[in-house]
Length: 497
Image (tube, rainbow, N blue to C red; front, side, top):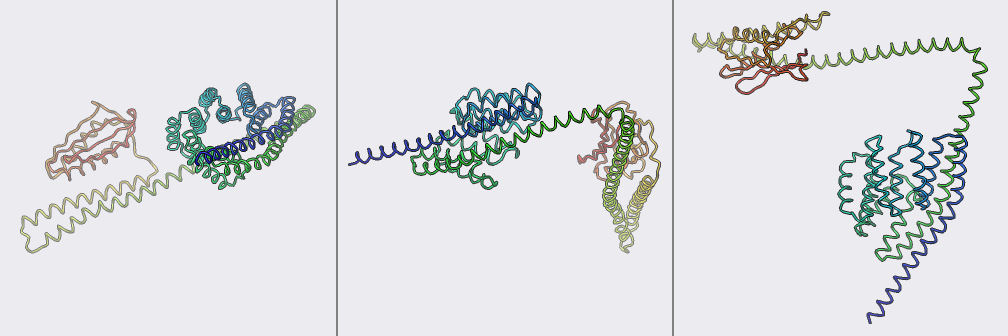
């Protein structure tokens, strides 16, 4: 009972498969007829470009012919014209054309015709002629498709994962989905391939493309349905492909060839216009010498004015940035100085209240008075520093610079802190050089280092402090480091020499 049914199913499957291939053959017949008129017109335009000797037009003709033959399915002829375009562009150094993109197109048609070794060679040539880093990603995607077609699906998937993680937005979702489709077909995952095809068709529709733009996907879907045995769906997809193809044949031929004809017409007009201008200039040359001289003077004055304006704009921009930076620094300074003033003020107020307490004995009161005196001195010095900084800012004369030995300046700062400290300090100096003369302001440098040492002295529990400096940025800058026992580092590295 089962054998007749199985034979019937087998005959039905064979009949469906035969019908599917007949439909495909019918499309190929119409394709060959449709391309003939377009190829003849493109050849005529290419001859016009040769006659006018306009090299970009000739290269464009080769490229457009490659696109036309590829669109119509004549991949061998398309490959020949892509090679002619690449050779002509390289021979004449036409930089307006992107060679990596042309190599990518050539590799695509070679892959479609099964010439995988040649496709691999063309991809490597494209990588060697990269002019921008982002051109590598289309070539890598073609490498994924090549791997998929040659049975190296594992390598294709590995490279595809690397591309998805590193292309940084240079590839569209549609192009990535096309590579994913090639991997699915190579791994015979026809169910996933159909899902990927639907996704790819949806992406093209979302971006506003008509179905004639991606009509070949319907043929791929028909072939995938045929592989799964769903010949009814395969027939519908193939029929839809044929309808779209017939529409695209006429539209694309007229549009591409019309644009190319316009390009050649414009180029021919440019050449004729240039020749006419040259003849006119030769006739009127003796009458225009004075005008040319006057125009040269005006042009020179204009250039000088533009240069002066640009220079003034740069100065204004620099002054604006300096003013903004100064405003930001003032805000930071006010916040910091508020904190610094509050610290001794709080100590003075607090210990003054303790000293005024009736239950405090003379010894405690005297210690409170010493603390108040110390913080008063710190507050007085802080006010003096603020006034000094304000004087520097308001003064038109910058601080005087002169030769300063960094080691001598550091030792003076250490001695100053030791002399004015109320506690015993063990301050060590670790210079990188035996002598280091620089051209700077000894006064400003001393103030900065003294403040760092005083700040460290307040927090060092045992009074052990280390002052050191190192040369950085190829010995063009000095980084000062003040370290207390708690491993707290205070750095000052704004000195250049």
